Image (tube, rainbow, N blue to C red; front, top):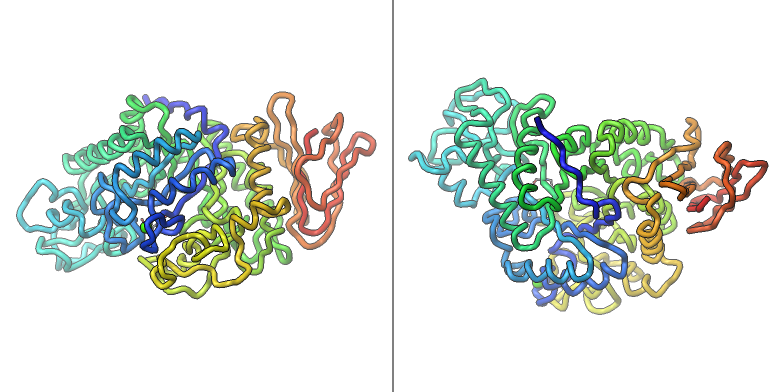
Length: 525
Ligand code: NOJ
Ligand code: CA
């Protein structure tokens, strides 16, 4: 019988920051961000109030998919530095109260990985079953999986997870039907699992605090209800936690009901069906739009359903964005619109994740050429804008050598400009983080009580509560002013916290809030 472990206590107060290493800070002037560069910016992260980072893949790789195609899981890519740099990053981060999580590409390797090269050979060897192969290259097994044909000397097709150069590691099939499909407890899949545990233990042993797991949902193939994938992760988690009880596992799964049961501590609300992240922040008619926006209802319904399934066992997170999707600063949004979004993100339950640059409103830059398999994700991966110095303080390299071009606008936002402007988005984010850190009601596990969600509302209010501490949050992302009346919550008093365009007063035991267009208020009751 599986008992889900309690998540580490530090997650209750955690505020994560996602670092895309190639675009964050280049310390050696070759145009590509690196680990020493991240170390240089730890003071900034500490100033902002960040206490955990997730770094996108930084292992040896041919970088056909920006590092999501690993050649060696035990070695840092030379362009980012050395293993020693990473160990130093962990020590320096810990000195500042910041945890370090890496990105574990558990489902596939690169086609250049020595395991895959061996697996491609026709002679039977140690790695023949490390990947999923059909039994003949010429027959068409009519599989729902993506099969790559004609690549190898070995007679067979391999299963690719995403791009053709990402061959799926073999964790087995939930119910093998064809002869080439192995069960989860066949020797090949068990060896793959053992190796994955070894990789996890290796980095934890060197001071890393946890992992974001790429495509965590996908490991066992043809797995209805993900039952076997859940069992696989339960087993991995149990084995690793026996030695490292405080490590965290964050899943790219998008279904907290499943992933939290699988033993993950955090899952992202990044599913793209009705009521997912797109209905909140991404779509043209999502909730956070000045005009033609939707009611919060669809998002809220889906969020509350998922929260009920996880039953307080793990955290659901709504990220500001990430390296795979458009930044929130796109499609005409202004810094004020972003302030409303961040007020939501940093007063919402679960664990906030801020994608580098979103805290200053870096733009999604349209029209850039694809880089390392980025396609339309390129615009969200441009260099961090630190200052008005050369290359926005990202790198001292020649501009043409930069990993990606910078936002070309003269008035592009920078950390330097915004740090010294008390009304900036950056200082708003910083203030919200500080408030959250001192207020258990606003943290991961404070209760959420949604208010005012009638169908036609373009505003949204909710309470967050823990013990005697209670906050009211009101948001109006639309351009239209409105009034909100909140009944029956008996406020003693209202203390202003962080507001813009929102005025609250008590009338006959009710709270009345006047909201200007594009406004927010965080009140302590
Ligand atoms: C999800 C990652 O976030 C994405 O960037 C990558 O391309 C795919 N998984 C494949 O690993
Ligand atoms: Ca560099």
